[in-house]
Every structure is written in C-alpha cells, then in structure tokens.
Amino acid sequence: MKRCVIVGGADISNYGRINGIITGEDYVIFCDSGLKHMDKIAVNPTLIVGDFDSHENPQLDTETIVLPCEKDDTDTVFAVKEAIKRGYTDFLLIGVIGARLDHTLGNVYILEYLDELGLKGKIIDDYSEMELVSCEPAYIEDSYAFFSLINITGMAKGITIENAKYPLNDAEITCGYQYGVSNEVISGHTAKVSVKEGKLLLIKDYR
Image (cartoon, rainbow, N blue to C red; front, side, top):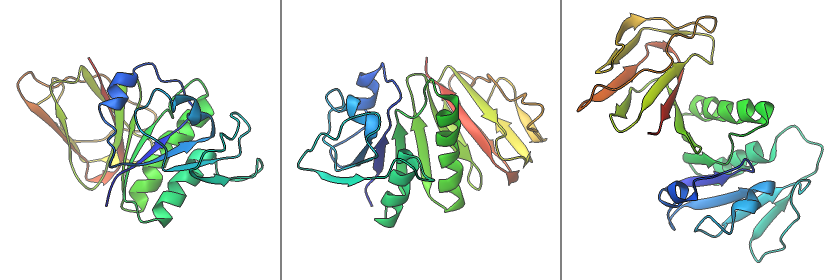
C-alpha cells in the first residue's frame, strides 16, 4: 500500500525538504488552507477535503469532499479517517505544526490515534520529525542534532535509550517531569529507544 501524505494549513518555510520526501507515488490529500502550499509542493493533490472557511474551493478537476463548518472532526482528522477508509496504513503529515497551539496539539495526537489502530504515522515540520515509540523500538541516526522523548499518554515505563549522550535503562518519564528533552546521538552510532509500558513522542530535530 502506498503512503498517504496529508497537507495542512500551517506555515512551511523549507519546501525543499518537503519536496525531497514526497514522491509521485504518494496519495496526497490537501486540507482546506493547506491548498496554499500546492504551488510550492511538487505534487498534485489526489484528494481535496475541507469546509473552505480559510481557503476558497479551487474547483479543480480533482476529487473534492466539501465538509460542513460545524463538525466534530477538524479537516485534518477527517482526511486521516477518510484515508483509513480507503485502506491506507502509512501516513505522513506536513503543514500541521504551527501558531495555533490547539490545532498543533490536536494534530500531534493524530499519531496516537493512528498508533491505537496499529497504523504508522509521522509528522514533519521545518525543524523536526515526530513519531510515537510504543510496541516497536525507534532508531535515531547521528545526522539529527537532538532528539527528545515526551510522555503524552500518561504512562511511559521501562524506557531504554542506547548509544546516546544520556542513556537510560528501564526508566520512567512522567507527564509531570519531562526530563527526556534534548538528548544527542553518539557520533558514528545509531541511538535506539524502546518502552515496555505506555508510549513516548519522539521528536528528532534537524541540524
């Protein structure tokens, strides 16, 4: 199954990085004001969704789902659910981390929603990549400047970090004490992060 890329309306500065990641094989959904990125992202939309309260409907010859303004799901969440209905299991979200903290946090928790369904999800913004560490370990190359582990689900126990400046062994990070911020991979190595109970948000910062 091909990857589903969902484009939100948060600002993007580094289109070069985005265009180096998205391919013509991806199923690309533009969400409402995410359409402002369409000219600078080097792929055409496969699907457009939105209530068009922040961007006009471009009336393209592309499948478009017009949503009501008053609804439970944000346009981005609807796009994720629609792609799941169509059988997609691997998701990349861009343009979803921005000035609106409420939207940003809601979008970060889409990773938790996908993980609960056994699906893969990643968020990329101008500064970092984000994914969840849960059942499977995660690996961080030394090309990243820093990486952080944030408890966003209430419980994270049995945390092990290997090949990093600040290693851990069978540790716990609580929501009230987030001491897993700004770790570094040992040069020439690949760090490994695993958790026995709960989940962690892994944020890998670019150099």
